[in-house]
Length: 558
Image 1 (cartoon, helix red, strand yellow):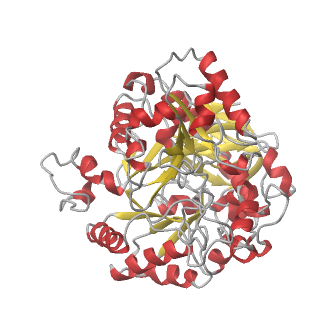
Image 2: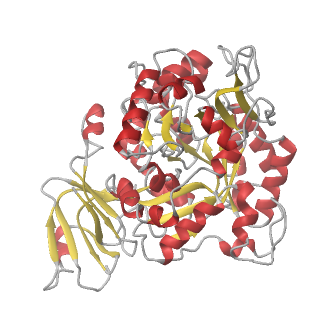
């Protein structure tokens, strides 16, 4: 016990420590931004001073606040000002007519004048009862005088209208880049609407944005999206140079009250490291000798943690990379479609070795099993072993094969799963991949049994910030139709909660300060109105956040 008077003592409810050795306690004391005591009520109450506030939980549940293991915080200040074209339950869309209605209402409500961009988020053809992609003609029909761009739910693509394509310089003469997708008009070569992967990267990097001041003014609302869900450490999981510049400005101005973990996208590394090494003039994978010094330390609540690589695309967009073909046609109607890697395997090996040799942590996006094979080979070629404690995170690890778990163990790779896919796209995955592969989606139970440490994530803004849905999806693995997507991969609520707390903390090397309730750790805690470990499985979805604390300071109260 730390010998200080507590600022607050929590008692009178369920307290989950997320420590396997001592799962539940009666009381917790905090002060000076840290946890002072954890244990029996009588023991903890000995830290009470004249000014200590005793918080009666009244049967509610206290636990460590949640850690965003992978997401895109930089999207939050932007999408507050975008139209929501997501499907149920994240948004109102069930068909193309709904998209048209939402966009028209958005333009009217926000007085968007002709010629100005209209941006939407959450587009996904699997939500549309029309059975086809939304096209430029569909968007032109409702907004012919505005450039329009609907960001794909995977964040790997978009649908544009005619003025949008013109503004971005895309036309019939624009070639489809390697690793990219541009759907073309039937019988012609004009872009039809949807673009994905490397065809989208230049557009994503140059999205039209409000002014810096307008974005900075949204940072409180952006952080409240997380704090209201009990999350106090957020991730920007594919940081572009302009994103880092904005977040650093917010940090320097004292606007951050949550911790932000930035993972720069590999292609943006030269721009980013120049902020720390102005004389650096190298190419994408020519890291300066001292590059690692830029990583791992918070500055005004912002830190660089590692470098993000990307091997393939999204399974719901059919741009992931598999060893076996889909059972349905590819995104352009291709037969026997296995997808493709975003970059050549030789380049991925070069990326991985360069980053590893620089002593920087690697976060790599891999969805399909062939993409995972590429990353496994790259890690093995770079000389990685489990004993190195590199904590290489394989983001998503969605459609692994069982044999690849052994490779993860051998090389020290740690999966960050995306179990809410079972709900949002489970039925689609079964249709595209068949039951065998679909049922092994985000195989958390098998990973834990193999001895791997694994987190879970929402990949915001791909799916909403919703830790309780993440817990529920890991426990239930139920699709929209009600099918259990792999009964053998269900885990207990305790393990599902660990994936959002201590395991997520371990992946970003913060297990000594976050993730469990223990003396000396940061007082990052959340009060829930129910106990996820004891309520019926479907009741987990109904559990709400009562209050969230970051280092002892209340940052959200319902």
